Amino acid sequence: MSGPRPRGEFTENLEAVARGVRRLEEIRDPILRQAIAAALRLHEREHRLDSASRIRMRNTVLAALAPSRPSVADHAYGFFAVIGMPAPVIVRALLMLVVCAGLLGGATVTSAESLPDDVLYSFKIAGEQLRLAVAVSPADRAAVELSIADHRLDEAERLAAYGRADDAIIATAGYGVSLADAAAELASVESSDTGTAALVAQLQVSLAATQEHVASVVLRLAADPRTAATADVLASVAATASPSKDSPAARIADQAVAITARLATLADDRAALFDLARAEPPRARVTPRTDAPVANAERQNAPAAAVPEARRTASPTPPANMGAARQAAEKAKEAALKALQAAEKARRATTRIPTPSPTRR
Image (cartoon, rainbow, N blue to C red):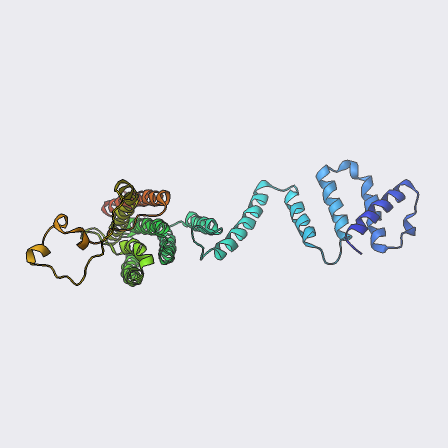
């Protein structure tokens, strides 16, 4: 039997038997006859039931008449019927949370390789924030922050390979912030947990390997004129902080500050090129002669203002989208400030003196 037909027959036969027009024994379908008999027995107690109970009983009777292979619509109807049943608020909240977490987890896995302009990128960011929210200990939060930093650096490399300098600046800035936050979390327990100290040592080795990898990527990008500008963005990852006597975790935070500070300067200079190019009048380009030797040593050591225009290094190309360049510069400045705050937090954590526990007398 199809889905809509049994429900219509059930309603028609139930009304006919209730009015006395038809006898229950005249119904040949045994399932339909049993359902109508159950409905007639429940009708006597209907006045003692609330509306929600009647709805549940009606759904139970109709479920017996459903086809052997329910459709997607029937599954959806059943799901929302369960959600709508009277139940404690906490039960429904937990059920919805499980469903949302499953959907978010599936979307997060699918969006692992997405970039900022992709549709699923927001799910990727939401998944990262969810992981960070459920992390309890400083070591767990540091592990999540380092994972996020790896994601941002991977995005920065791919964006740089596509020649998208502005997006690469924002991704690299996010890498620096997550690295600084991870170092601040580790610094808070570095002196009290021996396992954390070993984790910080592993992180230092990993950062050195990361810088070597990024250096090879920078060389490859710099060799291509289409990605020469983005090579300078990734080169900021190689920035190092000044030597200090702080703890290893605090030194990692200082390195993140150096990365974001260099990136902010580069992004700000890149955004300023647009105003500079608009203010200067256009002039003819002169191709420099590479085969003409310099006259003497004094000419080689002369300042840039004294060297003819034909022998100067060509200035960088201004960005095509001024709005995107300025937005990237603002994001880089915000990242530099956040990294600096995380580094100060790490430095305070290492200098904090633990409070001695009171002794019993």
